[in-house]
Length: 284
Image (cartoon, rainbow, N blue to C red; front, side):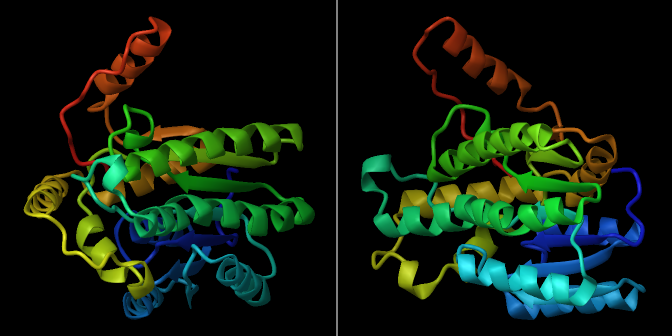
């Protein structure tokens, strides 16, 4: 998809972090933007900032874990601009980092699978048929993580492994459908975002755990946030996403820091060895 100017993009999780950086970068390319986020106040600020810089931008507060809200987002986008050419399923949350799987709660899984995985399914099922119908070139970007390729050690990793597999599934389907809609699986490394703080702030009350997190969990979350603060700027990912859209490139990794982890996992699979533990590092 070489020509972006004048086309329409929908970006979820667009009030901050990677989504906001991508929205700003697409605006520079002359795209019309529909931004979605569960944080209505932050979303409004992001839209106003883009408009002050001359962008044609609309904000739609959306809980992307809910199908009916993604359907409403699609309707708003099509009412405003007629067509959608680029869909970036980017919304994501972090969740617990120091909890063994047997101690995770149903609420943990409902929340994280809802935002990190089901939102991508909803986006694909709602937007892609309309993109196929208008017949013009398009592109779908799904934000996974380098943690979605390396060994899995948290719920976050599990959800991102699912997004990687879903993205490959979508890629093959769209190739069979004629190849006019490309797919990119964005697998960021450590980027300077506010993922931990934002995740805790926007978690719905109905899906919060009654018990306070353990001291170990609090320390792990704080360490994770410190690692992210030292990460690369999210604008790096935004530049790479635009390049991937133009070049119809599937894989986007923001660095080579995870290469040894990828190699370790796939070598253990090929050699039928048991998984080996890896030192935790910030995942996104």
